[in-house]
Structure formats: C-alpha cells, structure tokens
Amino acid sequence: MGKIGVAVIVGSWVVAISILLNRIVPQPYMDEIYHIPQAQQYCKGNFRSWDPMITTPPGLYIFSLAHVASLFPGLFSMKVGASFSDACSSSILRSSNGVLAVFCSILVYNILTHLRPSLNDRKVTLRTVVLALYPLHWFLTFLYYTDVASLTAVLASYLMSLKQKYFLSSLVGALAVLIRQTNIIWVFFIACTGVLDYILTQQKDSAVLTASSPSQGKDAFPVSSQGVGKGSNLRKRKISNQTATFSSPIHQMVASAASSSDFSHEVREIMSRLWQFKWELIASFWPYFMIMAAFITFVFWNGSIVLGAKEAHTVSPHFAQLMYFSLVSALFMTPVHFTIGQAAVLAQSFRKKNKLVSFFQLCMALIVGFLSVHFFSIAHPYLVADNRHYPFYLWRKVIKFHWSMKYFLVPLYVYSWISIFNILAKSQRKTWVLVYFLATAATLIPAPLIEFRYYTIPFFFLILHSHVDDDRSWLLMGVLYVAINIFTMYMFLFRPFSWVHETGVQRFIW
Image (cartoon, rainbow, N blue to C red; front, side, top):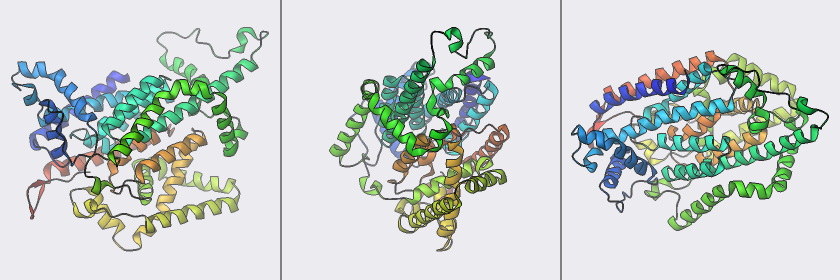
C-alpha cells in the first residue's frame, strides 16, 4: 500500500474520531485550558503574553499558527471565521495534531524502510499502522497537547540523521526542543547514533578499500543493481539490505563475532575511531553541539528546565520511573515479551553464559530494582490527588494495594528490562543499546510525576529497533491497541463524572 495507503488509513480515523470528540467535548479540557488560550493569544498577535502555568516552549503554538494560516482562506470563504483569531477555535487547533499524526505515520514508514529495507510494502504498512495505534500517541492525537508534535519532530530529526543529512537533522532537532525541552536528550541521542553510524561507515569503507585490489576488477563489488526491473521493489530492497552494512552499520551487526561479544573491545574501537575522525565529526556534527550549548545557556538563564510551574516540576531522583517504563513498554509489546518462547530464550541465554556471572548479574539487577522502588518511588501531589488520570488508579489499586506490592513487582520490572535488552541485542550493537538506555534514563528519572505519555518517544525508538519479524505478533499488538483505544475513548466521551468541590464535567484521560 505504501506511504499513501498509510496516510489514508491514519487520516480516516483521525477525521472520524476528531468530529465525534469535538461534538461531545467542544471546550478545552485538562491541559488544553492552558495550551489553547495561549495559542489563541498568538493568533491575535500577542506574542508577549505567556501563561505562567505552561511548562513547555511555544513550538506547538508556532506550528499551529502556520496550520491555521494554511486553512484560513478556506475557513474565511465558508464564513467559519471572520478573522484570523476567530479561526483559532479549539477544534481547529486540535486538528493541527491530527495533521501531525498523519505526517508522523509517514515518518515511521520511512524510518522502517530505512532500518529494514528487506521488508516489503505490506509488512511495513502493517507495522506503521500498528504504531500509529499506539494508545498514548493515538489518544492524544485528538487533543491539543504537545506529545504528537514532540514525537513527530524527534522522528523527523532521526530520519534526517539516518539519511546522513546532519545539518537538516539538527534544525529539526532544535524545533523538537522548542516543542518540549526534554527532547534535548533525544537530540543528543540522535547525534550519538549519527556519530556511531558515521565512524562505523568510515571503518567499513576503509576495510573495503583495503580488501579490494586492481586484479579483482568488477568482482570486488559483490552486489550489483543491474538486471533488477523497475517494478521489482522487493528485489531492490533485498539488494539494499545486502549493502546496508555499508550504508547504515549502526543498525546491523557488522562487527566480527569476537568484537560484537566483547563490549570493551567495541568501546575501545569506537574511541579510537572518534579520535581518528575527530575533524570530520566536528565538521558534520557541529550544529548539534550548538543546540546543546544554547540549551545549557537557557537552563542557566531560566534557573530551571521548565518555563512555568517550576515548584511542581522540580528535578527529582525518580529511579522507580525506569522500572515502570520497562513494564509498561513490555506490556504494550506483550506478544513479544510475555510469551513462553521468549521466557525460554531468556532462560537459555542465561544457561549459555557463565552461571556464576549470570546469577550475580541477576542478583544485582534485583537489588537495584528493590532499592529504586524503596528509596526512589515518588508520590507526586498531582498523582495522588487527580482521579481523572489512569496512573492514579494504578498507583492506588496496584502499587499501593499493600505495602509489599511494590516489591513483588520488582521481578517483573527486571524481567521486562532483560527481555528488552535481549530483543535489542539481536539487531543492535551494545553501544547503541547503552546509549538508548542512558537517554531513556535521562528522560525519565528526573520526572517526579508518573505520566505514561512521557514514555512515548523511548517506546517508539525501542519498537522501531526491535526486529520483530513475526506478523502475528504485530497483528496481536494491533488488536491490543485497538481494544485499549476503544476503552479509553469510550470512557473519555461517554463516562463523564463530577467533583463535589469543583463545578464542570470531569473525564478520564491518560
């Protein structure tokens, strides 16, 4: 079906659900009561106005201005809005996320075709549609939150980096930071993976030049695109997959068996290449360094990472957040992680290693997990006081069901991380896995509030780089996502409730 098919599928449910939601919930709800009036101030040209309760930069509002401007001639001709500011209604502002959701699905399609060139259009389309249904991303598509725009900008920056368009990638990365400041971590992650990709590409190119000789002639190049018909897209991708070792080595196990199994050797090799290509790296990646420097300057000037409500969003050592992320992400990939087959694979991998070392590693992981939930579990005032969010019920009904429950969940957290590492290690270098883990930790640990929507970007990087080739698993994940989406949207639209101490209708939300 291709990208057009993906855009049509995603666009169809975006339009249908948006019409339904805007009819039932026409007024701003939850965080929209801050974002929508702020965007409307921008529509009036009042760029000096700022709500002190807003914690994120104005990137989403700036995009919305462009979105409304593109729609305004049509809206004016249909007499929907007499002026530009009148056109910035709640439904129109929400529709900007709908447009971004369609564009995001196209980005996911392109990233998948780059990372997995051997997949045919049908398989890529299936994976893309399933990821577009990811419950947190899907639900927030229909509200005026920053999450969809944030994910879209980060993925666009990553795609440009994969194509080695580093300057353009850094520009889009800067836009991602203007939408949500914690995206600076993912810009740094993209820069790191781009550096790894670059130095490994240079290494393999050098190896090819060394191995080639004049006597080999044309036979020095084992892959040729000659003889492939124009309509044979699958054959082209197969050839591209054979040459992917040279074009995108960070996503392929290109090292020898010895180096891939020896993490320290891999690190030494990378450090050596970093020094060897230092000037080339500086020339290619300096825009990322400028973004990092600008962000650090902003933090010192602002006195905090967030713009507003600084007291409620102070940086906290919330190590338990990493535990929650692992279990939630593994549950959203249940057909991959929570199966008898995967459990058997993990058990076999432990048996293959030194049993004493494996036992020690497992004990250390459990100890870290117990220490995290015991000393670094944070009950944020927003979490324990707001029964409109699903984490409120998970906290009270599961984690706080009994004082021992948070400890009983630790083995599940540890299993989830072990399974995640196992899946990633099958297709990624250990240094890539390490950089990903550190980026995820840097994003989640400082956040004192348990918000599953904070997990969206690390989840997308996780699942995009987990080479799950079983279509059945993707179909089951799709069914799971659809069931969750139907439930959450039904609860949001048709099961409102009221608070005694506050007027207005309340609704369940992620």
